[in-house]
Image (cartoon, rainbow, N blue to C red; front, side, top):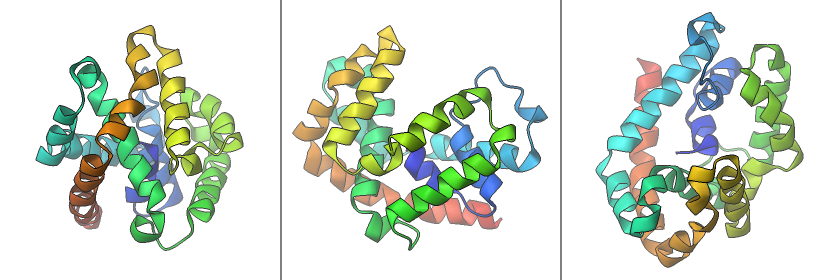
Length: 194
């Protein structure tokens, strides 16, 4: 699952939610030196990634992608699943409209900006300005996100065209998401309650 799913699955305090997002931005950061609630969110992020990466539905989804894309299938599926989450937010969200949820997330990021890992701090303004989290619900938005990811790394160049695989397998990937999401949501809630 990508950023939107991590934010949606975060339970509790705003700093824990920020930590769930920050999990993708702590390479080279001494996590033990971060605020304890951020650490809790980062650990939740990592637990979600472990759960999803080993799940049979996720593995099946990876196998749906053509061979040239399999090396990046994990990243692509994370973004594809965020697409289905955003597209069907009324069904899978937290009861608020997606725009309202995203506004709250950006307010929390702003409130805690002095605690953010440097990479997330740098990205936050662009993320907010371009409304990245809300554009996931449209295929054009997913294409834009994946092209941006591809530009950051020459090795990730196939990501620029991987939305062709989403189009080719749209119904099957949507079905995969619908099977995985309720199980992931229940698992995340149970983990947060323990």
